[in-house]
Image 1 (spheres, rainbow, N blue to C red):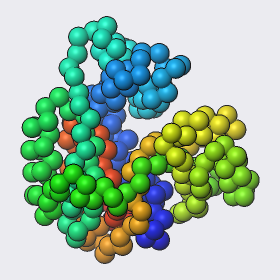
Image 2: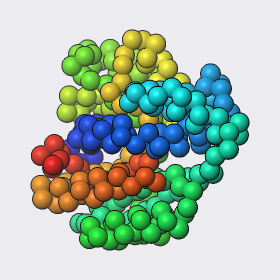
Image 3: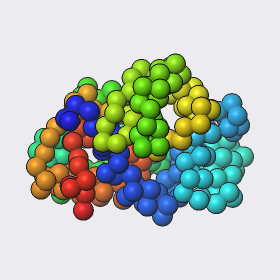
Image 4: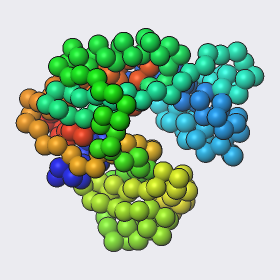
Length: 246
C-alpha cells in the first residue's frame, strides 16, 4: 500500500522511538520549552504545551523536569534558546527525508545531520528539495481491534472535524488539518477513544515501496538520526514494513 502507509510506518517505528525518548528526556524538555516560550506557560490555554506535557508524562518524565522546562521556556528560569530547524535530504535509493531539529547550535546540527546522512549513502538537499513531497497533517492512529465498528468510528472522526480516515494494517489513520488537530483529538478522547499515536506530522503524499535490504538501510539511517540529541522527528516517504525493522 504505497500510498497509504501512515499507520504502518508508525507501528514499525513506535517501539524504538518510545524507548529512545524514555532515555533522553532532554528532547521532550526542549519541546516543552519551545511550547512555553511561544504560547505561554499555562497548559490550559496553550494546547501545544499541554500535549508536550502529556508526551513527557507518557514516558514517565519526572514532574520536576517538566516544571523546570516550563519555567525555562517561560523565562522564569535561565535557559538556553533553541531554534526550530528543518533539514531536507535524500536517503539511499533516492528516498526523500525530512529532519526536524531543536538546536542551540545550528552549525553543530547541520554538521551532525549531514555526516549521518552521507555515511549512510545519502546526501543533503537544499531547502525545498523534498518538502513538496509531503503534506503537514494532524495524524491520529487508533487500534482497529479496540474499535471494531469502522463505520461508526469514521462517522465520529468526521463529525469531530477530521478530513479523512483510512484503515491500514489493523489501525485507523485519521488525518486532520493541522489547525484542527487539537480540537479533533479532544473530541475523539471525549468520545472514549484512546489513540495509539497522535501528532502533527509531515506525511508523504505517496510512499515508495522498497525491497527488504534497502528498507533495513533506511531504518538504520532513521535510527541514527533519532539518536542525535538535536533531532526531534524524522519523516520519509519510504514504505517501511515490520520485516525491515531490525
